[in-house]
Image 1 (cartoon, rainbow, N blue to C red):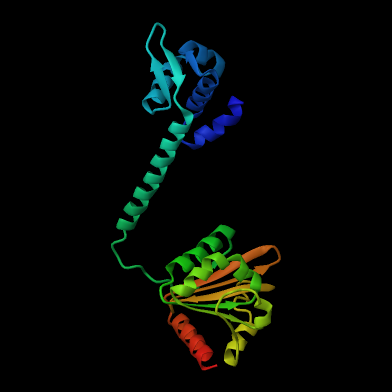
Image 2: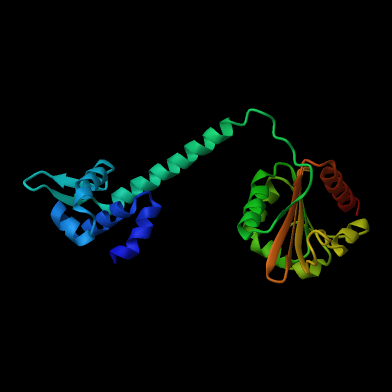
Length: 251
């Protein structure tokens, strides 16, 4: 059991000896350095150093005597404190990194491709959080709206939201401001937004999203892979979003 726990303890900052000593003491609850040395297999010359360090870091307590005994402190309290310290450290590091940015952000000069599922989900969530005024979703698949419905729905009260689809009857039951494409907007839905020589043959598109005339994202799948093309701060994005909205209002 101790061997199985060691990798998890190493993940929170313990070295192999510390993890072995701590997990051994958790099993014993209270023991002398000699007992821990014999059961953990940690060299006797290192055992006192490790026990004292674990005590200093708040994992264990020391009962003075001859010999001294060591006991485990409440595990829930110890790990709750570790979690709080870790989160606080992350927040402080994030703010410190942000403070290093003393120059204006250089806008990207081209579109970028995301191939990681985590990166795609993170970018979609980021767009939904960052939107301030207006969002156009060109939707090719109703499953996309169902998947993100709980995130998209609250935006309807805060921004101008346009969900543009090819056939509105395919989206029955999805309570969002859905517009059926007409005129030139139909061409945008009939032509896949991210197919081409760079991405290859993407067989099924999910959506294309335009945010505040500044950010663009298109998601599609090919086989078992999911891909996204993103771009921002490009004049064409603002022009395209404005044109779509004008066409929808006119229709």
